[in-house]
Amino acid sequence: MNPAKIFIVEDERFLSTILANRLKKEGFEVEQAFDGQEAIDMLRTKRPDLIIVDLILPVRSGFEVLESISKNPELSHVPVIALTNLGQETDMEKAKSLGVVDYHIKIRTSVDDFVSIIKSNISKLQDAGTAQNSQ
Picture (tube, rainbow, N blue to C red):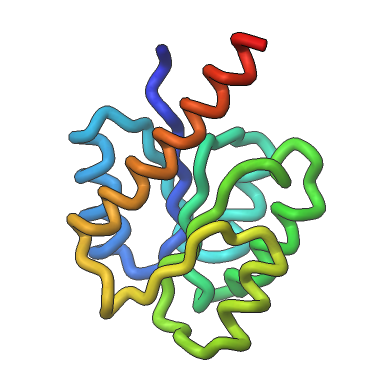
């Protein structure tokens, strides 16, 4: 089986790099974008299995990235996890209405915990794919 492809949209390069390196050690393929416009441009050709997005981004916001994903029929089925500093209920609701399946606040989530969350989400995807292929 091919390694799952994870796309990280995070403007904090230090956090993005730590997360990317940890995920690569776990056997995932990882690509990164550091602002919202770069993410939107890259997602025109990339087909990740999972997208991690910060909501506070330069150039175009994470919400704009989510809108772009939700309007693209080739990406709208891809699970998106928000990792952000926005903790207001209204932000969470807006993100979930735009397709976010899991929402985490940066200061409350360690890198180790977040890697476990990603692995769990990928495992669910692979289990769903296996079930779908056996039908």
